Length: 279
Image 1 (cartoon, helix red, strand yellow):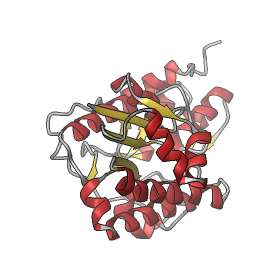
Image 2 (cartoon, one colour; image 1 turned 30 degrees about the vertical axis):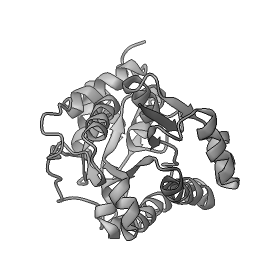
Image 3 (tube, one colour; image 1 turned 180 degrees about the vertical axis):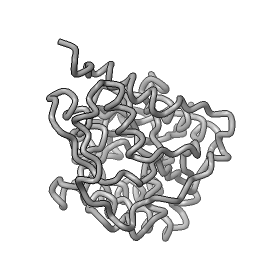
């Protein structure tokens, strides 16, 4: 019997995976931090669940996406934890599924902030260990939206705040391109990869990126708030992605991804954003 463990159960991705794996066992921060301090506690946890003789997939959804967070905390969550889990995967014989970013494929840009740098650092460590790559699965993802939690440090989170508080939103020219994926679509894609026993490195892409300016203009237009959008009021990293378009992942050819902009707007409405003229 296959058992599924999910680390970091409070985030949008973990919550969506729980809908894909309703019988999964979740492990919170206190639990996996205890494992890192004393690896024997992890073996004891597996023994208590009676999974040492079962096939186990462990999804590591724990991590920090805020580049302005404490650097040591980012390193611990995004590098030390997945390295530890990778080392233990060989000892306890489970398959580890880790989540990175497609920006790992653009190293110059990935070195631009502590969050991306921590992801790139683990990715390089993962590739350097043949056992990890042959036994585990590292999934590179694009930017997610959807779910009940919105991150104030991210692009859509900042747009959300500007619309809720009716304040100006300043951004660069917005020529950067991004794929945005609904978290529920990604969870389904992850399950497809898990069930086909993929290992090594895979990315989840639909191949239809949007310019950030087009996303922003569409959102502010929809909510009758064009006057709040201040394009070309900020700088853009010269190493950011303006050209690289990822091909749709060949491992999930039939996977459906909902259209980006209209569904981002629907999500913002679900979170309570209204037209600025509404009372």
